Length: 263
Image 1 (cartoon, rainbow, N blue to C red):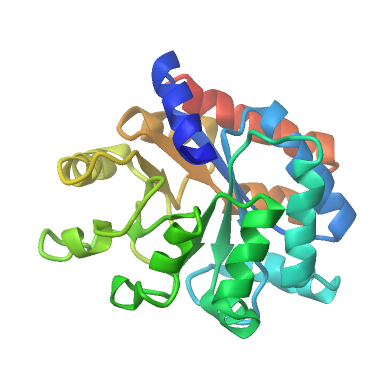
Image 2 (cartoon, one colour):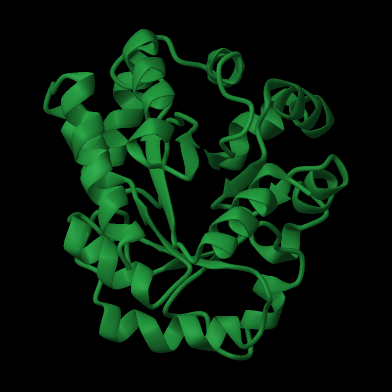
């Protein structure tokens, strides 16, 4: 059982929904980013999504694009991202970490070497947004063989014909993208999301977590009430970008987590 599986089992036993937070590794610099990441579990975060900075983040909106650029400008690399996970694991061996990013840095390193390094560092799962199911042999299947969950995204345009293909090698959880378009582009609506989550859950036993367009505690609660949990990224990254202190950022994260957990 992976840390992700264990976390969902724990939440399910407690009758709670999951709160997942996304932050960009190395934004605005290594030390500040590590301080934020270390504080996330005590702020109520159940699963951490850690962004891997990349020069061409095509699925991301301006907020996360700029975060990635700040991290790259500050010298963040794949190696330093893995080191950040190791530094986090020195004090926390239970909170799941999902590395989210694009395939190019992984391909450049070599899949086998990357998977060994990622598992050794303490990463539990991967979300690689530019590798469709047709390319599962490239990374998804080797990742699962190495003990890492491979989490797939479903979207409003994933119809009933496409859904089984998306779900076929997915593990950990399914990430439902609540809106069409890029991250941070619009507000999620629970009335739209609920039927889509139900449709996905009818086709899989995996938890379904909803992200994109969640910026407030009320929206986190509303979305979590119709899913197995909520993901917030751009809103948290915006707080970091504004130069707020780590304690202020974590207070904002806690308000979102409290919202999701009240569902």
